[in-house]
Amino acid sequence: MQTRMSLRGRFHVEHIRDGKTLAKYEVRNAITDEGLNHILETEFKSGAAVATWYIGLVDNANWTAFAPGDVMNSHTGWVECAAYTAADRPAWTPGDAASRHDHQCSLPWISPSTIPRR
Image 1 (spheres, rainbow, N blue to C red):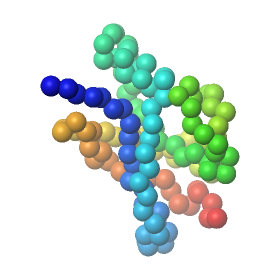
Image 2 (image 1 turned 135 degrees about the horizontal axis):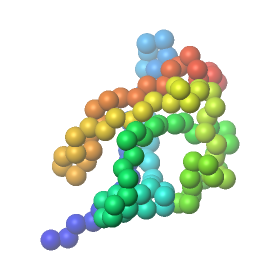
Image 3 (image 1 turned 90 degrees about the vertical axis):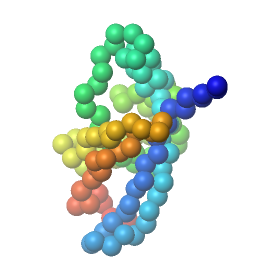
Image 4 (image 1 turned 180 degrees about the horizontal axis):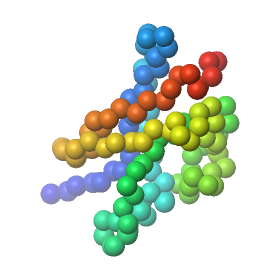
């Protein structure tokens, strides 16, 4: 038996304005070195789990690239979208893990009133 473990995410995003769906996107999410180290520390050693994870947006106007060494306080290829406040950054609520997936059950929402129209 051979099993390969691939750590990444996939987000389904709907762009909704005035109750109308304008577009749907599937966005793949990579994992950084810090994330991989955290998993190894918490699962195979005695590292502390993180109780709450948050979802943020990347400002596409300044994006050049993501890098494995990116951490929240140091990432030269991108900046976080500042069109919403930290209080508006939604918490990610995981679903139950089954069939080798963590099925997201709580959909995060970022208020359209805080994101500028372009």
